[in-house]
Amino acid sequence: MFEQSLKFFVVFFVVVDPVSLIPLFTGLTAGASTSYKRRMALKAVTISAAILLLFALGGAAFLQLMGISLEAFRIFGGLLLFLLALEMVFARESGTRTSSDEAAESRRRADISVFPLAFPFIAGPGALATILLWFGRIQLPGQGALFAGFIAAAALVLAIAVALLWVAEPLMRVIGVTGANVASRILGVILGALAVQFVLDGLRQAFAAS
Image (cartoon, rainbow, N blue to C red; front, side, top):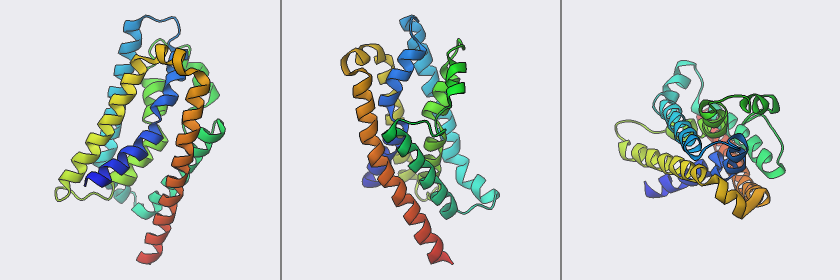
């Protein structure tokens, strides 16, 4: 269980990529007070946690209701995560997080916690796909301990995200935009390999079931 939870923590951390949120959050909250920044960060992570928990509890049932097999979603989720990995490595917008129009709109909003911080930056399509891929195979209540382990791992990632957002401004002075981009590219390479593995596992299970 610990090994699975640790593996999920690594995957989820890479997908959410809290380090990449630092320059984004700094730009969106430029000139704002410290209390506003902390309030927006905490509210965004809280909303993200609620969205992710909803998908963790009901995502698999929703797929079953729609007649979508977990193998099919595993293949699509792997492709989606691969696009996110390419975005991270080449620093290009693939649409898995937000578009330029959405980013421009967010700068005009007083409350940035729901959009774009909670969605699509934290609980974006990549994070939601990851939640469905990992939680969809858990059978409750028999695997309650594994479910709790995954929840704890996701909570730790979100806690790291809110901590980094709270100290985003001094961190930006230390690591700079270049440092954040280098870290994001390294994480993107890891995510790309994991995404390919998801697709291979989905194809293997689909052919084995047929």
